[in-house]
Length: 524
Image 1 (cartoon, rainbow, N blue to C red):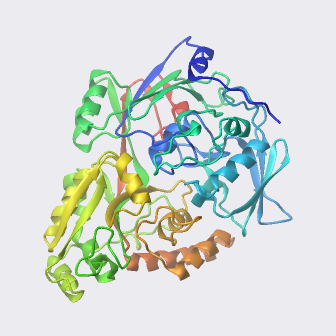
Image 2: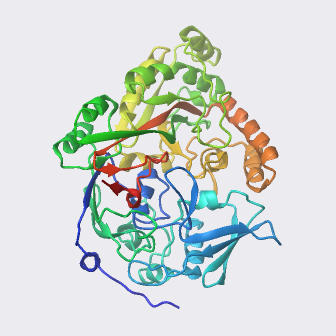
Image 3: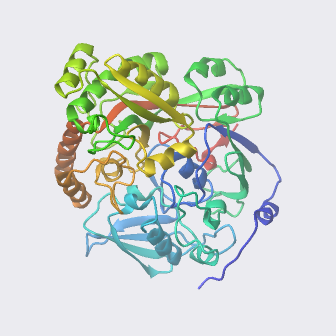
């Protein structure tokens, strides 16, 4: 057994050399919700954590899977339900403790525990066991040909460190819980935590003992991450030289940044769909309208989808920086097709007729809950939707808040009509079905705040996880998408475009997952 090695943030700072310092001052609209890697499945949270902690398998900026804490993996020849992972030797946690199979077993079991918000990614895992100090076997509930792709956001922890600090259970973010693991980090990654002030500033310094120092550039020696919610302030900080790098350039400022000789913008279509979700249960959380929920009627949902003019949002709100969508699946994902991605043109007369047929000739009122610091132009998109729905008689009250308030609202089912964005790190449709369409349970549907429940679809979701014939699996996935598209529990809006702005001296490949990993940054 490894003995605990505890260090403070100040000690970490002292252990890190400052020679040849290259500080990257990084700005973003919002902050990570926690440092506990199994407490919240949210993009910015995972991105900040990924500078300091690592999974067994990662995705490189080009989208390909690459070895990380595992050097190789394969399905066991004698049993198609078992994956064998060979672990990287000689890896150390930031406190100096050795990484081994004991940590992998502990971390995966913690990540798939009931309290974990990452469990839906690895719901197919039945058992994890160490078969040597640097080898683990992962048994799944049925053959799972895409397991490694589903594990790219599952970070490894030091078992001894977690137990010593009484953090074996993942933090409950929604309840406002604070734990040792939510405010401290002991990872294997390229950067060590120096200090953190929630929603204000996080400082990290390069881990000069990082196993990948000869594999990746790792040129940045210090990272200062600062959330700046106000877009104008964030861009001004970049233009004035106070920031070196921002990921979320407002579309109206793209040309302004490009015109600055010391700056540049790199662009990529993001692996993320932005959409609205609808409460389809019998009752509204916000109170009944004449004793019933209009969103429970598929005709109302389809009418609302038709009322959202995606092309107008792309043209006016996004200034061309989006790809209108007819399905909540990014183009990178297995299962996407042009046929599924079609969407109806806005026809006001037809929409009003659909609403009248459903019993809402005079429309109805409802609240739209929306973040104002998470997605590109999120509040502006919601404002546009409010206007579009008003044209067909649906009166919408917009409640736009910071993501720190918004996401707990989603988790507690305290919303009837909401905006959400969804990326797919596995690049496979199963990820979307697991989290967003499956009936909400301990293992599935953790982000399904629509209350949608389709037992037949639930069975199909489990079936595709075990189907090794990819042609047959693709056909099943196609049928599933056709079903949920007809049911219209989500209203697709668009796929985001990424515009990363930075000082010209940096060479960066934009990650379609919008996951900036500083170890890849090169400096001219």
